Image (cartoon, rainbow, N blue to C red; front, side):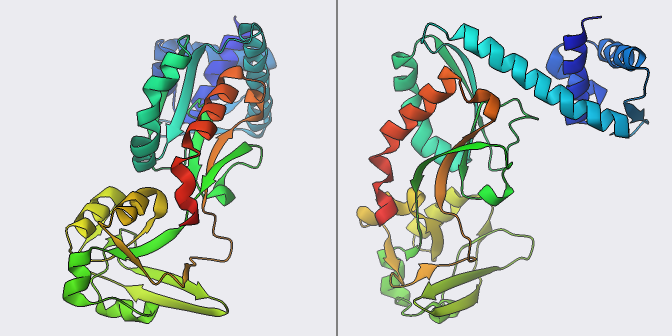
Length: 308
């Protein structure tokens, strides 16, 4: 038995929740993964998983073993990286998760230049607005907009920039309906909202010690920020969006920000940073460092709108 291969198979079974998906990711038959996990249990003289037709759960011994296996696999990968990049030339595959709109607007235009500058590297980009897990999804770098309170405590974090949020509308909309002078005026406006399970949104604002909450609604709810931006540009209503998305529209006069003496204030520990995150076992990865340094340098000018 190749114990390291069996440990990888076992970890994937745990992380994916079933043998079929683990076998797909490994590119082997389900029966092969089953044999590897069975062989581990025989070697260890203990049962690692409870299996049924619908689910797989870990036994207490399996939970302890899985935690050790994850650390061992990370150490093996770190050791491999230290040798593969010992000549200080970044090479190989880098797996990255990006938010959809931010990735399309800010990262995609940089990909060609990065690959030209580092021809021995390859990028695997996954665009998703979900909270990616670098262990489960075998990622090297995760780009995240805020939400660090839900990040793993062991991640290493590099800040790339900051942003603010603005309420804005098109000149045509304001000409027809006027501008809100206070957040409470928003109840009389058509606010285009991001979809949440509640079916409505509460926009919170702060000015000095004044904090107010406004329950807004309008004629459109969507789960995509770029759709809301486009409808706002067409003059149909107001949006509350981050400056990384609508900053250039405001600069170009296509949109106009209002309520600028208020700060959008969803909750007291609101995080408006743009971050690159990676696991400690990537700490010495030249590929990771090269990519993040490249983003920091190239995004610097683009992120000036953080001071909007």
